[in-house]
Image (tube, rainbow, N blue to C red):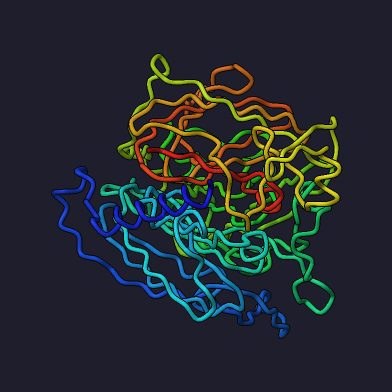
Length: 480
Ligand SMILES: [Cu+2]
């Protein structure tokens, strides 16, 4: 009886929210709540300031991307969201550990916000780092149309930098009139690599050498990268600089250089970089997306040095490591093993999947249901109430989640409400054991992640290629 179960979960989640028990971690923090209005609506923007053309988009507060939200760890926020779109929506705070009722997933954690309606999201910011916000309703369309924005939670003691910049990288699919192509949710995209735009955007403007990130010689720059594209991945390289990675998905890692073949940034992921700008006044260097070979590299922007004299002649030597967030440490020795097996897609071996409990061949599911992917043999429509959760966990349970990709496609898998440690890829231990909320599974790859299920509620677990999510790669994990 999925409806009864769902109503029960919603009722208990609402009760939890109304009691609003602060996490003991923050009992000593005297937080004042900041109220922020966010309105989702349709409007038009100039994607290229050098051009008079305007493009119709959907976005937050008539900005593309939506306004960058900046807070300090421990702050309390109240997002008063209003929906002026022609369809239902809701807002999800990607990566943030919020109470379940504030997670912004229609039909799982709240009722959708109808056109003209509003919803109040209130929560405390437990974790510092680089996050973002976007709708979780028809996200393959709503995010692609422009509903996304950065959400930054500063550390109590951030590393010393001269500049802290955010780059929201995305793409858009434009026709010759510079308007968005209205082909959202095509089965061809759902069953393949997703709907990839034909124009890359950096902070809502067309990417290219003219997108200048201005620095002064000698400065230390913290660059926060967010991939808000619905399907495109980026492989970034920075000319003439030794950038260091200090965080994945907002969580500090041992600072280390970018991989020689570029920094892979999959949809949903964030990376924080430290760049010591030791070029000379007046010089410029390109930031490139190396893309997916054999595609040629694209220049996304330029690191442009001002003509002012250097602020220092040698790079800062202070530590750039981030203090960790307080995340419960999973103990693999006492963790319970759980498996999620991914199948489907346009290519690959024929498989059987269950839709509404009925078995069909994947090719029939693709042709008749508009679904293309299964997780543990089930394919689910976003708009339908979900069936049983993929996993039922006890609060406090240590979990080892084995993700087995039997498809020929990449899938950036995102879990709500928790961070997990990435422990092994194809059985081989990862050197960094990094915390993440979104991890990439390459074709035919197995990934082992571990976490403590310490945030009660029903949480989404889905592919962040949003067409894949719409095509069945979406389920829930219940922590009770
Ligand atoms: Cu996927």
